[in-house]
Amino acid sequence: MQAIARFIYFKLLGWKLEGEVPNISKCVMVVAPHTHWLDFLLGLLIRAALKEEINFIGKESLFKPPFGWFFRWMGGAPIARSKKKNQVQQIVEIFESKSKFRLALAPEGTRKKVDEWKTGFYYIAKAAKVPVIKIAFDFGKKTIKIADPVKMTDNMEADIAEIMKFYEGVKGKIPKYS
Image (cartoon, rainbow, N blue to C red; front, top):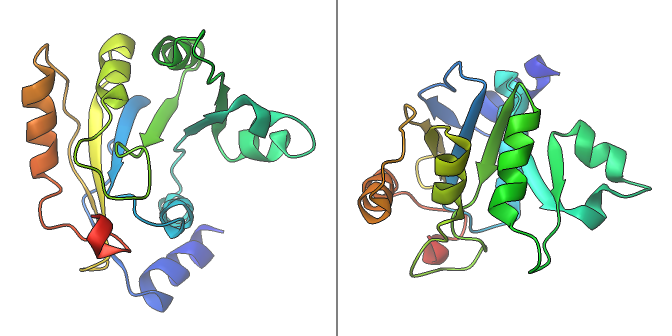
């Protein structure tokens, strides 16, 4: 499977990779820009090409029969999305219950253009006491860039501003949404 994924990613599609997934068992991966549904498939492909376990979260209903087993097998973890449930705390509990959990999140929270990122990734990383890894899907250069892990400080605005610098000039699949 890895050989097939590498062939598709590098040879057929002509993408490149800058950096590598750090050898850490728990982290929040901030993947941006998220402008198209193909981002998820590209993420699955590079994950297979690198033979890395990378996780995601989804609403509880996705994890019920008949397809729940598939989403769990793909590395997914269910969370309740009701206003009564603290989603950050639910995700922290997932981190605490697993020996390995590397959560990939799109900070925009949508595939459309946003003026500000959602801050959930920051709060999750702080509460779970895990680093953030910046990952850029640059369709303009056909490159996935992976940065070294960084710890979040108590200055959210400065941390997010520093993280966003990594994504300057990066073009998503739909550039106007980048």
